[in-house]
Length: 167
Image 1 (spheres, helix red, strand yellow):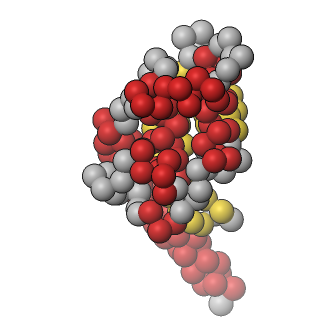
Image 2 (image 1 turned 180 degrees about the horizontal axis):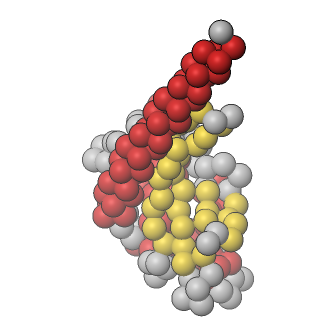
């Protein structure tokens, strides 16, 4: 009887592991498609140049500009879950996020548009699944910048408004 219980536990563990791996592969594919589509969607917003200049006044490096824009979006753009889903590419522009707030992908798209407006175009939209206690909780968006000197910054204008060195 004891051996049988161990066999059942082992089978359940294997099945759960396979399900988790399968779901991760599916989500990775969806996230790759989302990243591609959002990177195509993000465009410079020339009307925002003066605002961006004011936000980044005193910055002498692109890294400083990236930090300041990320933090400004975090502090000044309302988190608005009513704004739509991760898949809504057409009906909600980065400019809309500035006016109405938005979810993580809207705030990320706005930050990327602001950076592209001042010529920082080596940053890209990233998407993934947040894992909490081993359970896939929800999708999330942020951006990644690989600076010309090779430094990689992962920036999140939604949660904390900060950047960290990635790799």
